[in-house]
Length: 541
Image (tube, rainbow, N blue to C red):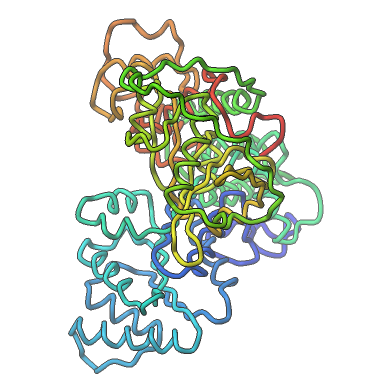
């Protein structure tokens, strides 16, 4: 309707996936890299999650354009299926013939296995992609896991990619699905666009739709658009489409703030008073997040920490011999060091990690690494994640790597600079391209972090304790220190939970409101300027 009026050749903000309008933000590119890794790996699962409208389908469509020619792809769009229906759909997607009316799971699995063996014999690979995987029933997820048991002596026959909303991660964390969760070789959570990416996204779509003159959205309006949409691409599309329609009906040459607010009110259906209140809170939060990002980006000066000697290590009479200075090796690979075992690389990695914190790690003492850290005032966090999350946490990390023969070995990530990363691996220091991490890293990591004195366990909505008072003092949540009444352990509910969720969403986390290590690290980052970091802000990540 408004296309000709604004000099456009196509509708710029349709919510229907169209390859002409694919805008790849930093998050989308990283998500795509994880999916490509899954297709090119030797089997297992790759998990991509994200809130509704963040662009999971866009990434998947882009993936399908880039799959290698030697790849057979089965795409399941509607996973609300029984086990028999899922297997039947897989057969249909791969073009596998099966007896008419067959309902036998054994027959379907045998036919799929034979097909995968045939694909493997022709030096091809098979990939199964399941969208909206949070809708899979538990018994169907279990059958999906069993399909990955189809393998030769040295090769998995089926790669699997699951895309879904954040609740998919909650499903996979259930005890009954731990076997499936353990087979996930790479996982990534796709967050919303950043405030800087919103104008790039809008202008990209307008240009793709044929805009050659002027600015339909003045630059100052993008800040309001970001607050209204929270950076979610689908909501940006709906708001921009409605705002352009409003500008057209009013005879305006471009969208102004009043037109955008009216469009938002029509889209959300909220009353004016409620809308204004919500916008005020969003403005405050967005400003505080920007302040936090600015603080995180400033230069931190490392100072020597004076670690407290662990009492139960005092019996060690001989101080461990200092390691020779690491040899700097110019390399572009993270291959396993020659003649190094998994155990030796792990011990060297832990030694390097503790050295970054100016702490003592006793090799071969028989005491677990996390116990040694706890005795010296730090906590351990072991998990699976992505490169983006490591950048965000900004702490040195021990990564578990996997060689071409599926053998494990370990290295310590000590810094990020631009598109390169530096590792302590064995007795060497290597600086490598970022793609090397994706190539060799299993996704498993271990970091050390400094917890607040109030932290005993993860804080969940509905609980109470001194951590609530700690939260109420965090500037990143819009709290003022004088507003927290000392000594009163408030219940973790209501406004403070919503503020935590908004903070988590703004930094790309699942907004579950649970205050655990990662949330604490990012809330508390400005006060920990003496702790080691991967990037000190002198160079852009």
